[in-house]
Amino acid sequence: MCASACLAAVANFEGVFKDTAPALELRGLTKRYDDGTLALENFDLEIPAGSFFGLLGPNGAGKTTLISAVCNLIRVTSGDVLVFGEPADTLVARSWIGLAEQDINLDRFLTVRETLVYHGGYFGMEGDEAEARAEEMIDVFGLRPKRDVRAPRLSGGQRRRLLLARALMHRPRLVILDEPTAGVDYELRLELWRYIRRLHSEGTTILLTTHYLDEAEELCEEIGLIRGGRLIARDTAAGLRDHFGVDRLTDVYVKAMEVSS
Amino acid sequence: MSGATGLKWLSKRETLRVSKLWTQTILAPVISSLLFILVFGLSLGGRIKHIEGVDYDIFIVPGLITMAMVQAAYSNNASTIFQARFDRYVNDVLSAPMHPWQMTLGFNVGGIFRALAIGASLAVLAVPLVGVPVERPFALVAIVMLGLVLFSALGLVVGIYAEQWDHTTFIQNIVILPLAFVGGVFYSVSILPSPWHELSHVNPIFYLVNGLRFGFLGHSDVSIWLSLAVTAAFAIPAYLWAQYLFTSGRRLKP
Image (cartoon, rainbow over all chains, first blue to last red; front, side, top):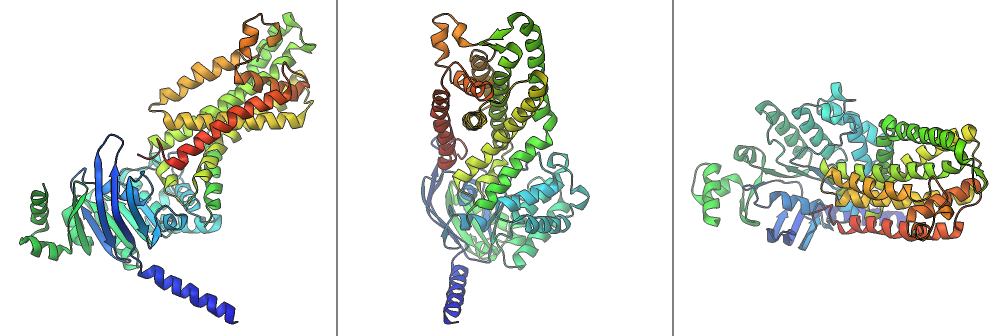
């Protein structure tokens, strides 16, 4: 009895400990590509668990490199990446991350259902659980009529929704969305915003990169401005406006980029 | 979390890809190899009669099965990983909670599955058609597995390094196919004059063909142990090379 009670207490303690760790912690992250390009330089960032963090910056600022470093998709030059206190390259940390990349990178051989089920499998879900979750995601993302259609035959909007459904399939604690609304029409953009808001309201930490300032202001609790591989400002939208003494986030962005260039 | 479930699903995905395209991946190579057996065996068989005491149509079967399997294992894995890189779907696997060795193994499964399906189909058809025996089944299984590890791993390595689709087919058409043809598929190297006889012995596919020939017919140009050793000597580094690419992320991750 005592042993099981003690084990339960330890498990609870560990649960509390993990929950208090930041969802994402980057310490001195540097990435220099093979061609010499320095994409990130000694980058530090901490995103609290349960928050909605937006990363804004021009093309080539280092947003996608940062995301790729968190998701083990690049070879990091130096620095540490921790996800809920665990090194990002551990299996458990990887299982906590859900990524929807900017480019549509769906498996052309798989149907909508298979795309979700196989992704769930890669992330450790067993057959029945993956099948049930896939059916749930198909309904949530309005893909029921396309359930048995292969990815290349989907419309652009359906592919985008499938990409998001795939990222959420294994119930990640940290969802990373790399420009999820790039190139989509306004209607779908609003629809995706609804999904993302709901996800956040359920306690999931979200890291969003976007070029749309209105999107960042609408969704994010906190915004980081990144340029040339460095974080140049970080605050709430209101805090950034106050700091730069302007009324609109667009002006914050312009000023911040001018100052840093 | 051990990554075992991920490995299982990645292996399933790789075999599903082969099954979905079965007319291209299995049926087409079976038909073309069967045509080789029928056309070469029946037309040349009438003139050559025997090689080392075996009917010509029986003699060529092990070599043709080898050639079909080797090409299938290589081309399947070169194309699956190249396509995964090209479509960037490979990121879904690379970011998954799996160890690099599990990714290497999972991606290898498709080529091995496809080659075994082709080899088994050809053997099932050739046994009643030309009466080819299976004299040494254990030796046959051992050499087939080593050969498939070699060529499926080689396919992965080339598919990972390839910048364009042409690079994968270049290796197949310029290296593997010619080596298979001069590896004793259609003849015994013992009838070759010097230096061609000696040169044949530096061709790794020669040992593979002779290993399979030993498994089917019970004799070959070289010892089965030499065939197994040489094939293993190429298979192990090829597999380790593929493993290194997944572990280090070279060519897979910028």
